[in-house]
Length: 348
Ligand code: TXA
Ligand code: MG
Image (spheres, rainbow, N blue to C red):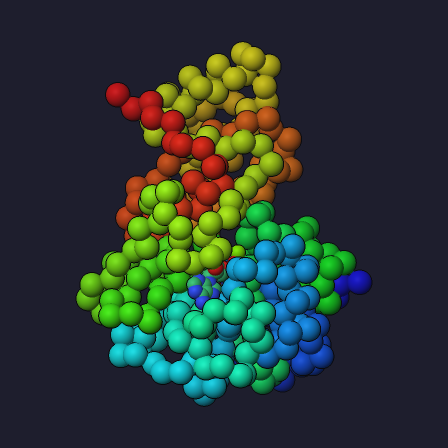
């Protein structure tokens, strides 16, 4: 049985709330609990316990070679799990923590479960910017390992309902703090070398990072499928809806032609569009995903929209693409992974 605790994230002294105290106690008993962060819901467990971490991997059906992010609530916790903090990392933490930035550093051996870091010599750490996550971590007194709280391969959860749909009956509890805000996961940056390298685009943009530390590189594997990604998780297909999703580089009338063709073959066709364009289509199911003019709203709605298609029993989905600037980089990274097909080029 999975317990559900509703928590109002705006109240003062959350750490003293009975729901938080209870969920924190369950974490100290090495059970796993889903919790809201500002990006997506995480599936939290005691990062010092092999037992807890094994439960996380089992509940998600996650491959054991894919390490977890360790969530902390204060910098004292950091000192216990990393060997040193290079100057670039220090600057990034000062600028973006708490927030949607995960930093890879050299691991201090001994404290953390080796399962959590998949036996690597490095560790991924982040301080989430969500009062419920921070209160839970603090109340438990533990570093909390937390991947996204979805079944591996499915879209990440942005509401407690999404977590229930995937993991009900498989985890001890869910702390419902309302919908998350950012909608895509944290940006993962490797700070173990001279120059920081983005291993996964996310809530903090490359442009924002560069304002703080100057040059920032991007793992070439993110755009070249022939290279092995430096972040183990990036090699897996992800975020996938049940029906095939084809992304189209073209305007609404180009996409409508593809829709008409498939409907002519008797298929039930979905279109993943934006609020600006939603009235430009005729299809079986039309879901707008945020406003194109403000890409943050697209990121926020992305996983809920992908999940909504699963409840609509369409046979095929055509989707609009987005400019790869700012958070658009993370949006297109997730969409191309969800699709798994090359983008259809119909623009003249
Ligand atoms: O926003 C987020 O980051 C969410 C919330 C819950 O905090 N968490 C999340 O975790 O997205 P997960 O497990 O779904 O993704 C973690 C990513 C994976 O791609 C993993 O391979 C990578 O971080 N990662 C973890 N440790 C690493 C390491 N030592 N070196 C390189 N990549 C690492
Ligand atoms: Mg994930």
